Length: 321
Image (cartoon, rainbow, N blue to C red; front, side):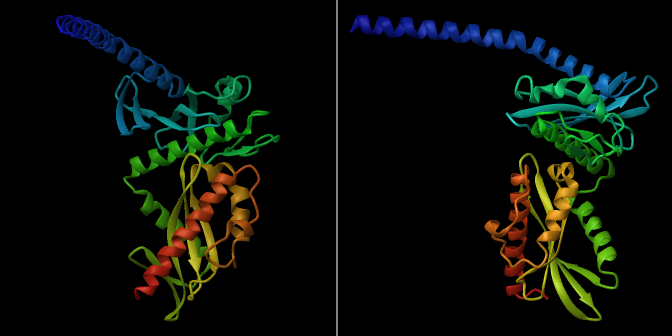
């Protein structure tokens, strides 16, 4: 028994000693690690917002921070949005620079990525990154075509998914920044888009919002119902405005409102949403034409439509008038 006690005491001492060394190492290196992180953050900000002398950081969540870049006189030169999103192999972390209004991208820096060597990880190359300078989000990625608009960049050959992932993260960065600058919530900005769209495609139709539902009326007669709903995509959620007939049985109209992935293939998804008009609800994925190279985002749109359908059906059944 004495031997056993002795072994327990020795093991306890060894464990306590090893734990103390680990704790000391952790504490003693934390300051250096934090200093290196701060330096890399400032270096990245300097590269995307030229002339930055100081900055203030606002942490949005565990994946996003907004850095207000200031000059020597304290004036705001622009903003850096440090943000993480999904890539082909894993997470991609960017520093995205914007002008003071948040409308134009000043530049991007890739802080972290685990994309395929020689293909996807070419997102760190200057030739690709420079394409984003002066662009106006939402950015669309072109495959095998030269950009003709300020909202377009060309994909890296053989790494289209990684290229689109970077563009999606940049689009999401602007969305976060704009909401922060204006004080708007995503819901408010989406409602403005819905109102503008309906005024354009349904002039003369009156829209009244009751709770989460929209009632579309003309001369006192209800023409249909609408709702904003979301579905989870690859690196971001996708919001749609679903408009249905009075029987809540088919799609009368469909507008894809936002989603950084959608913006990357804007034309493709506008065509996709038009093809869903007149389809019976709920949507059956097997009866929907596939969007080549973007099935995850396509599924997110279908999911958002079916989610909106279920909410509409339930609310109408419960007698909301």
